[in-house]
Image (cartoon, rainbow, N blue to C red; front, side, top):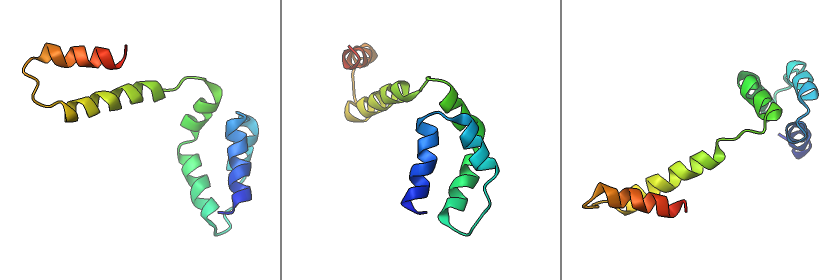
Amino acid sequence: MDKASTIYLLTFIRNRDRATLQQLVMNYRPNGTEMDTVIRTIQKNYLGIRNACLYDYSNGPLEGINRKIKELKRSCSGFSNLRHFFIRIKLIHA
């Protein structure tokens, strides 16, 4: 996939231009490049991508919290008291 095609596609997503993105994806004609794979993936996940363009919601912060808790579980195995573990979780997010 050439760099211009990637930038062209990402511009629609970043600018949240749903109508143009839909038009591009639905009217795309395969031409034997890596862009075919990208467009097929977007077509399969179109509703999620459209909703990401439509709404400002993100589960990124929640996923970050989950990652920190899993990291804490790996590094602090062997707590003698479960209450101490929950205190450490609260300290991470304070």
